[in-house]
Length: 340
Ligand code: ADP
Ligand code: MG
Image (cartoon, rainbow, N blue to C red; front, side):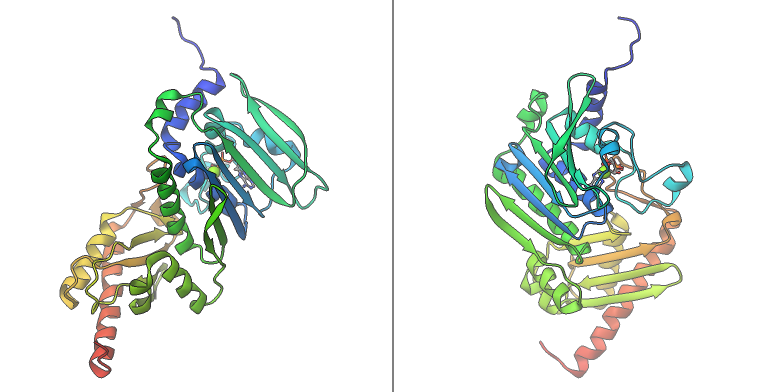
């Protein structure tokens, strides 16, 4: 066959294999883009579990007409310019892969308007060379991305999709994770024309507790212990299941600099703290760790589910100590005012 450069669409479809597993991964990439663009409200509309339609509308900064085509090209990003930037990345995106990948496996249109523009523009990429067409449109400041017929041209992927209900559940679960860490954002989620989630923005603690109740349920939220701890460049905050509750909790959320991370480190630290101070073996938690971005590597996994701490032991011990002292303090209070 000889060596040939892959045509853009095929190269993008191959890249899509890594980032676009199912409708929920599309929602994740698009909502993260909205948050990176500074949106304060994101509306998500889904039809048929996302296989028919995924529509994300935000009130973020928008994209200028000139940059619409670039936004749909691979390796085009506004978030990273040098290797140095990668060392300290704080935005969700940086690979410049998502829009190109998704548009290579669906019918994607991007409609956007910046505050400087008086009119909006719509773009979509077409054909094997993914040439971008741009035309005038109507839209307030911000962006709407519509993804229709996901995987229509990659039948093997399409067959892999589960029932609409299962795919929608994945979307709903993902939104819960982001809703917990971005209390400041108003999110709505609509499925087949019916609004199923409305997470109103939480600007104070009482409102955040409402969101915690919406996402994690009343038993967790009502008795949760608040964690707030700062040491040098590390900050741990969030909520821990009450050590006196005996509900088995499936609330396990750990964020590093605003990203949900699967990490054995924190699981271990939580269990160790509870093992010494309480009876619960698998306590629930919503914990947010803020750390100097230079101390953590996020470029470990394409979907960015994992991170590597440069000083893992130190981070683990810090979390353990923070939880232990919170539990101790709560224990003393509980002895003085036994509530259960
Ligand atoms: P990445 O997020 O890794 O930069 P994407 O393919 O997800 O790559 O997006 C490409 C670029 O398009 C982004 O860097 C950003 O400049 C722009 N963009 C995408 N979505 C939005 C949005 N909702 N609002 C504003 N700009 C956006
Ligand atoms: Mg992105």
